[in-house]
Amino acid sequence: MKKFTIDQIIRILAEADTPGNSVAATARKYGVSEQTIYRWRKKYRGFSASEAKRLKALEEENARLKRLLAEKELEIQALTQVIKKNF
Image (tube, rainbow, N blue to C red; front, side, top):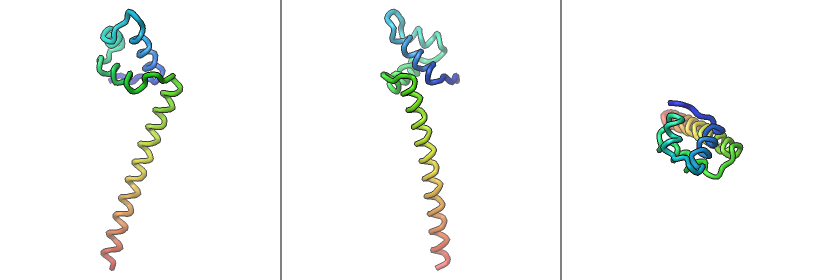
């Protein structure tokens, strides 16, 4: 699986949207599926490269915070069980 940067994705989408280019041809050129281009288009349409980078950073931060919350909930659950056993 190839990893593309946000800048590359934005450029690929712009290329796919130019008159005379098809999604299929652009997908073949970059070695991705047409579905990948459509997924990127759905996610990043209308974004500039900086806005798309900001979105990705926010998604990563959100995932990190969700993991942290899950860990804390597990700790609370474990401590609650220990307290119940002691009383």
